[in-house]
Image (cartoon, rainbow, N blue to C red; front, side, top):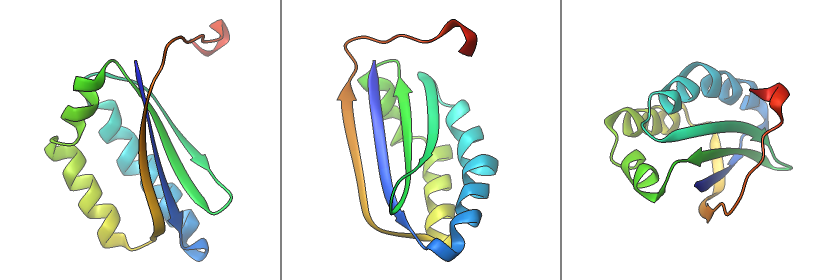
Length: 103
């Protein structure tokens, strides 16, 4: 499993717009990707992060070539509510546990 962590700053006055975009546009896009196992949209001290869990590195790499993903990236850039810094980190997950009440 691979955990992908994308972080971004955000215009604080437009945070609600970003949150709506994440729910309406980003979440459905992630759910359509082959190899996605989970996705979390989280708040940080200065912005937002998306933590996604993937079957393997090939699935994460396929995301970057997905027209669905690329169209979503263009739409979020055009909305202009993101601010630097931006970062992406890929982390191998050596183990995991999920509480049965979450399944």
